[in-house]
Image (cartoon, rainbow, N blue to C red):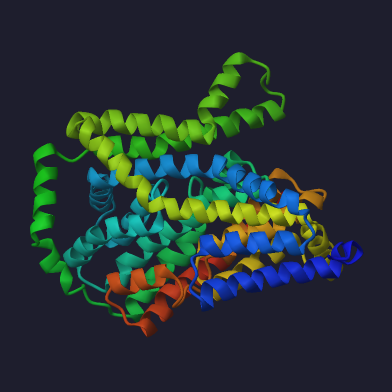
Length: 467
């Protein structure tokens, strides 16, 4: 039987929190246990060690898990379906080809980066990069030069969109944990992601392309001539690629709808319009992120359904959900861990510790997230775990504005982006797709990821100070 006076001591609660984080790292890194299993086990043990009544342990775990899934799963599922339809229809190819033609050969890397920024709004990093890689190879083959000149701006674009912009699971989950407004986070995320990409991915990609001469992958020519590639190309040719205007419309529609909600909310706060109008309520409903993504998905189905038929559309939508199940479950487990921390009072104890050290909350978020990222590799686990750790601290910290909360989410995401190395699946994906050895990948991809995370943190910190 635990001594209750000891259980509620700050030093004991902080020891439990530290032990929980170390246990997570040991289970995930050393024992190679799946993050979902590790988070579930550590959440249970933390609840028991932190003094939560035995009868309340399971309700605490299940309530936090379900609450997180309620907000995250819907957004991620709808976003994955939209991305799948754009992928299989040739939308990414249309987007890249048109932008290259409009920007010209000299600006081909910029065009690929902008195309990836647009396409990266609804699609995950891994899927987006794999879809864009044949296009990157085609452009690199057309204009010669190092593949890095064209690949890094595109890969960096997918990285910043995946890390900083809803409806991707990391920022959505962190926003849910910390109480940040999703619509405002979309605005702040885009405001920070675009200049971060330009400085850390596009400009660095031009430098790295001159410094490291990476030839075109030897498999490019053979894969282009493969039976599967020819069959897919023939199918697209027979049906016809979507128009550039339709692709841009699909990508910008959810942004417009969500911005409409944010804009109306700003006008209501400024008392420029009446907040109790039924028309305003209806327009704001259309701008809520789940509704905006659902509308966009329905529009995508209407556009592509005429080309491919509803049977194929239904099949593609079903296929899009399988790869995201793991991400959603890990995110839910991170929410479960956060619920235990909130219920145990660990957050209040950690808040007091950071208050004594004078470390700002946003700096603590970046540092904790970066440490977790380096230790176990997964950006999603680092982001969700850090957000869960800081959630109770946010609850007891006064004076945090809506912009502050969004900047905190970006700072945590920045920490979860830095120093991609051997324990990160993205590191190996880029290494193998670009045919680079590990040393070159560390000197290019790892450096770019560290630049992106650090620049985003500086922007978030500056924006938090201004507002």
